[in-house]
Image 1: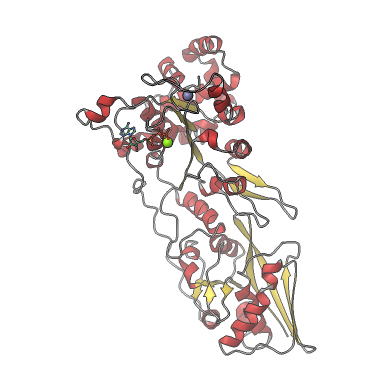
Image 2 (image 1 turned 120 degrees about the vertical axis):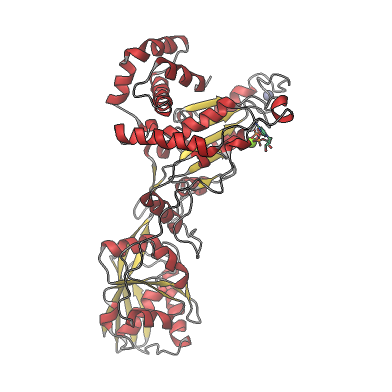
Length: 498
Ligand SMILES: Nc1ncnc2c1ncn2[C@@H]1O[C@H](COP(=O)(O)OP(=O)(O)OP(=O)(O)O)[C@@H](O)[C@H]1O
Ligand SMILES: [Mg+2]
Ligand SMILES: [Zn+2]
């Protein structure tokens, strides 16, 4: 007898539905899985057999063939256990095949028949909705994640038996639409008000958040670079439901959605250590998993101690910084992960850290500083719009009376207003401004004079000039100005690499 159900396979951060057909026929007992299963899926046979027996059902003593299609899609992981078990039970008359034919089933099985959570449930549920499937059965622990997708009949099961019961139930009422995105600040993010002094660096954080400009802090040890960088997430505007869903899908594909949690509550903040491998940073593996840059999608990626990262690893960032996505080529098929992050980086100006320090001498040999800085390649620096020299904190700022600086909440209000202006005017953030609008800015008589002067005096490349103009545009937006004035460009000139 033949019966079938559906499951899903992850391809990047999206999922494709996989048809699971089971054929139970007379002949020598055996259990084969065909349709490009990898070793982990072939192991499924033992778990399925054992789980079916453990819960007191019959494992048919016949010839069982399970076919997974499309055949050219590589299937990996353990989430195929439950759908295979369901298809086998339906094909052996222990469950009506009509109940399984339009269902999507996901989950790993323990030998005792428990259904264990798996990764990729959110993308799988999105794919099920797109294909207009009747219902989705997932391990209990994955229910909050699956319920994020409105309009899908999601049912949870802690065991194989419960999964069968879930398939037999009448249709459940459509789940409630997901809770609104909390409109408040990044509640966990530290506040900029903690930073004493450092007006220029604080301003750079505001501009970075407002125009989505990548940012680099350079300065001596203890200047507060790391402290400042960690305060960037708290300045970003609240995210939309769609953004939150996309970011959650990345985490789901990486198996990083906490069981109790549905949507990620906050924009992600990722700060990988400089010893991170290239694969962990940009993604990789034979069944590619998203890396740090994708986990930071719609959030902030902090690369602290930038020159300490492997040069090779940093070079791989160029493409994602440009396109907001990362392509990983694989023998079977290549996958694309989203990687729309805001980069904030920090570094010392030289190996000892004190080059240019007003009170301490640099102990490096001639040439050391240049070599150190050159570890961060030009093409990467080209994608950083704002460079800020962070001076050592003035003693008075830390020992004198505490000055209450403006907090993140107030700055964030200006950031939100500036983002609205950009969305209304050009439908994209200023850091992504290209083509005609940028050209018009370059030729605008209000700024062209100063721009030409700066380009000549500072020997700026055309690309550097474009970066200046983008930053000036953001400064104008923060000031609520429709046009970019000379003063905006003059301020932008402070954030240039030297
Ligand atoms: N402007 C400041 N206001 C208040 N505290 C500060 C300030 N700057 C530095 N600090 C204090 O000094 C500590 C060290 O700062 P931080 O780690 O950010 O320095 P850094 O510039 O990243 O140094 P390194 O180059 O060694 O990484 C902070 O945790 C904070 O307590
Ligand atoms: Mg630091
Ligand atoms: Zn030095």
